Amino acid sequence: MQNRFSAFEDRLYQRFGPIGGAVASFFVEVIQIVLLSSAIIIPIRYFLIQPFYVKGASMEPNFYDHEYLIIDELSYRFREPIRGEIVVFHYPRDPSQFFIKRVIGLPGETVEVTGGNIIIYNTEHPNGLTLEEDYLGDEQTNGKERVTLGENEFFVFGDNRDASLDSRSFGPITRKDLIGRVWVRGLPFSRMGTFEIPDYNL
Image (cartoon, rainbow, N blue to C red):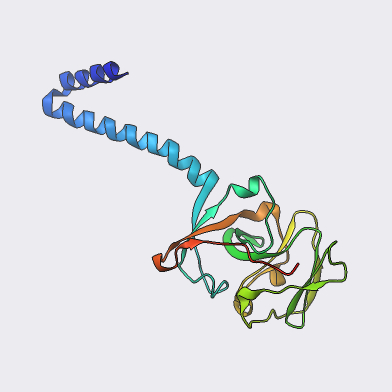
């Protein structure tokens, strides 16, 4: 392999002279590096992870406008989303837009918003259980509705409930809407870190 590249370089020097050959050899090396880097980076960028900038205040105080996040696109190819995970997805009414919200309702469950609370009905709690969300502080969930989720449907909320356009407005999202889960906050450096799934009382 090394001899073949040396012979190729020799032909460059013979054709373009010492200076031209050196320049041509340099550009060949640059092209090789770019191609190799692309072969590594492109699959990671489009199939494993991708960056995401937070826009708006719907996830405050846990995520702020212009924070830089890394989205894990791989996990949901092997498992289902878990309640409490932060996800990025295509806005159902305009798939060109990307939203960030928290998964609250899971497939097959009934989600009821009433009296400032969220009540989850499922096989473990057929009579319903009021969800405790410590990350909200004293904030309540306004609205009044009751939705039973179908197969592959999820009910999502913003953490800043009063400033969030979420499933209370546009309804459940589907499995195919999901891009991935928030994995790492990269910027600002003072808030860099990964995220744990909250402990719920379910």
